Image (cartoon, rainbow, N blue to C red; front, top):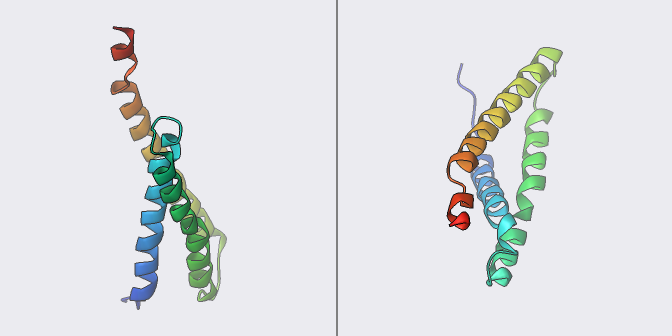
Length: 105
């Protein structure tokens, strides 16, 4: 059975993903660069993304007839796997590509 997709919601999710990327990529740059005005603008430009994700997911949950314990468990499991995987990748990246050895020279 094929689900009906709403292209408009998919486009909103893409925009929200771009906002999350803006949030995460500009978050640490305020202190480290002289162009903090641009980074602050980009950071606050991305703040719409989190409420947008909540609204889209709430809208999509309204169409469900019944939200079961198994459904919630599957969603939590998927979130934990995703967060754990990305956390491990970030840990590997920070561990292997840190600039500390260069600073010691």
